Amino acid sequence: MSRAKKETIEAKFEALDGIVEKLGDEELSLEDAFAAFEQGMKLVKECNESIDRVEKKVRVITGEGGTDEFQ
Image (tube, rainbow, N blue to C red):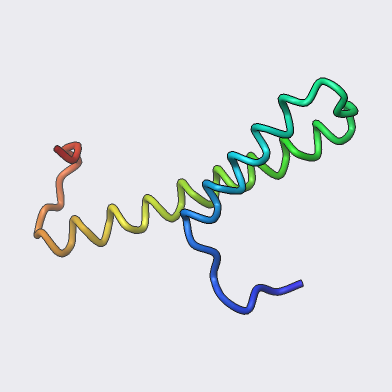
């Protein structure tokens, strides 16, 4: 199923919160826990990629090409 509109990073973080809560359920089966973990790792990767893209744009806008951390 293709997404009509891109999911925001905030929505992805919210989904991650739900997954963390789900993983805390002691009655969750091992299979379901693994599926939730896998989904969470995919979301983490997507969030990291989004953050990296934004960071690169900020560096271009500010004219900073270095690797200094944001303050």
